[in-house]
Length: 347
Length: 173
Image (cartoon, rainbow over all chains, first blue to last red; front, side, top):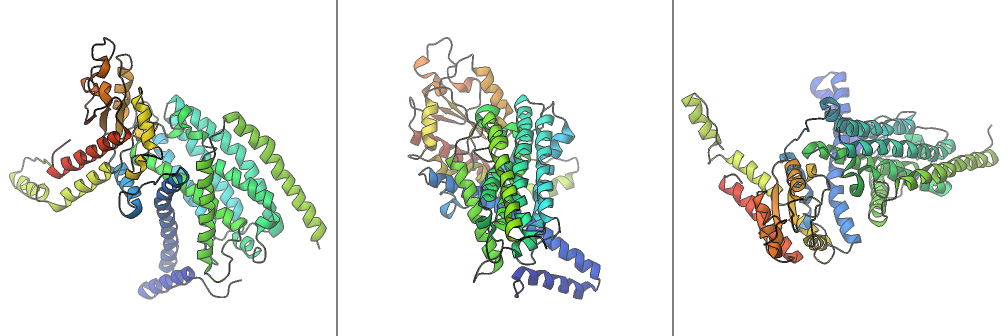
């Protein structure tokens, strides 16, 4: 338990009290407090996407002994801004044969699924939008909704590459969802709770990456596949499928998909930091800075994977998921259960 | 920007609002031109040996990424720039035109190398398009057989100058 309340908790309380003093209506204060949380989460997603696209290009350049963007502003930091403004000016093409409603809805739904997962991410002690007692289950349930918009995009585009990409998404994400959930189960068994704040509090002494190393590795691999990043980016495999389900989307519609991809990557990194790296726990610095450092380290790991490994084949992907990751995660659950039975017998 | 209306009073007010001395409109146009000029995403398409120079341009020695132009997109719907890198035959011409037509607007074409610019060594051939400007609106020609990667970079930077200058003058492309 941290005694001193976080900076952000204080800020939220200050906003609430200021609105209460100004309007005198408690429900308005509650509403503004909630909306402040929503705006905070949205700005985290947008800012992180803005920074991560730039960092991705810089990390890629660094790993390939290049310089990366460095002409636009100091160290090229305005490159992403130019890209976004350019995407806004692009023509919005809707091909003649698409199914308009489903085609238009798919990017929005994907981004909604990505954004909803942030409700249960504990950024600091008390700084969590909804500390549900089924927190991690909520993350898994909402996160897996990403499959459907991808299939919608692929199907509604009326394009053979998009369709194959959409079907691949479903196969891949459903296959890797199962080891992902089983890897999280070990942590839940030790903690005895699915509530995010309980999970973080249980790691005050020892991070779960020490007691659950196999689960961490399985989670890492499965979440790379879940977020459709290299080496598992078969969904938009350029050499085979043009751009997968995103083939027919131009301008800002495509940018929405891109935004959702980065939002999912940051979300997966946040969950890894919360469940395995001790969340906001850490000495000296405030909790949210520790959380930020851990998430940044996880994101760097994801980028490192992306620019190191080549893309694998579909059959390799499937057999790796079902024959290696799934048995490994089940064995981890069994071993964790035996360990708990031996050392912490039920009262 | 041209705005017309039936009402002469409204016309005079509109021309005052949207005329050349208007700050907001011109600034936004220049902002868009700035963004477009600094973020060309080329289509991943190569026809012949010039494509190898194009690939070398993205690699470590030359590093097109410095200018932010390294985002080669596989789908024409995401691309801004069609680099015609190599010899275009009449058999390949219809797919190339189709790719160009599939790109969303504010799009540009670079004719890279002698073949794309004017037939090159195949200038007498029955099967080679004698310059892609016969079938596509070319913005920048890059001479060379093949051009060095620096020449391609210079071509793209020239296109950037062109995009930004056109918007500065208030004219269309």
